[in-house]
Length: 459
Image (cartoon, rainbow, N blue to C red; front, side, top):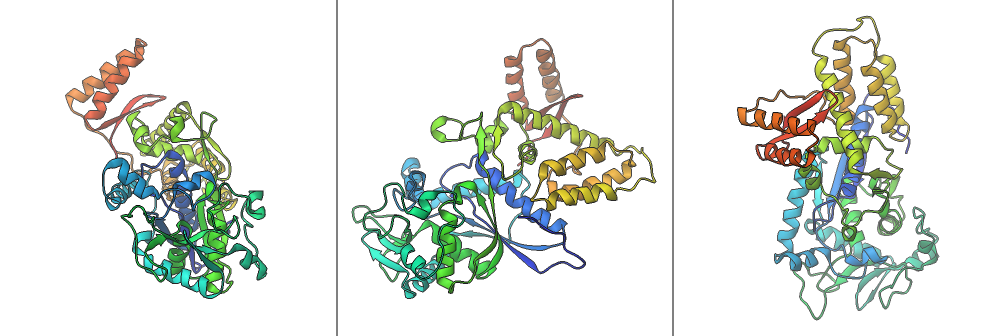
């Protein structure tokens, strides 16, 4: 999606919706890459002179486990399953992981939307949208629930699945479809609870007690806050094939074929050691895993900036270590700008325009970062570099202008020296144990090209 710089005054508001987390477990670093993408979109729009109106959903009901098998209408609700796993109420599970999401959101310095919209707070809106679709003859009832009629939608002259890269979407060949569907592509708008087991999360509706389908929430909430048509929709690559085509179909069906969204941005998958990420593979790392190894969450953000959002990025601990070193080096250079130096007559405009060009080139963040490094190595005066860093960091979000001096106790200072001595002796396992002791004192150790530094733990 090419973004063009606004001319003159701020443009009209740009409606932006991001598919947020399903709050049944800790988020992975793959999830966080998508939310950093949403943040970069908002920061870039502001920097280029637009006025974004940002909304993100919280999925706390209706997302079934069958989504992993190719049919999101199969399986058990993730919230209900997590409640059994943890011996809690589904509502408490959702609240716990929502709060953890908010904490991680702050640690990665993400821009807060105008609203975090919870699916359970918008049941009425979802029911009303299903009713509108049904009234147009585009929904039908089976034992399992109310379903969108894809064939009827196409017979009325509409397209389905144009975003998808899966041929199965167009041909209607999904995995193990729910019995009773007229077409394998049809999807649940409102689901009925099991007759054999009472759900914790269910509501009255014109069709009986049940709960909303996963797809309907994003349509209902995005249109409530941004209107029946808005500008940009952000999500992960995994949503491109089914979830987003379903959003388009049900939204345009409910509003009378009004075009739903102008631009779709899909962040590519994050690989781990060259393989897909998965809990069963033991490589679905979380933000807590990153911090346990002594990494600053902002180093993870820096790592994301090294790859284009449309391309898969390969995470390794070595790659994160390199990102941490690069991030530390950049912060050190920014800190050193407090000392005067460089030429006063050099213009920074060239770097500003190069940075904007990179952003307007489909959010080319690797190129944008290259401009930052080139600017830091230039002959610009330190004073001008400080101004430029503060300006460009409005998009980068690395808190480069907020490097803090850390005053430590004698005990922490001794632990740092002990760790450095062990590392010099090649006793890295013992050094890692000392790092944990330092962490227990609420400090993070960072190894840079010029030595070891400390900073207070974030969050």
